[in-house]
Image (cartoon, rainbow, N blue to C red; front, side, top):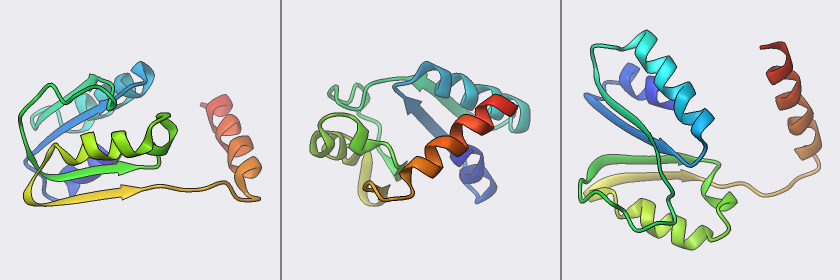
Length: 114
């Protein structure tokens, strides 16, 4: 959904990757349906591996995943490597709260109704 939002906000190109192949497939399905004419790529990759591409981007965005990698600081460092000088690096990290059990149940419920 964030990749589609990027296009809705004016991005001319989106390069999305995730370690989880189901997430990659979801992104591919969503973008194929809603913006098939736009320039985009969705692929499986590991942020802990050294960046394969030397391509740099104006905006690098990660929401709520880098702290789940097992090496958060390496993941952040590698994600930053994709950002152009003067670009925007936006990352959201979160910590456990008393509400975590609620969100876990909600996610399972949403998956079950879809």
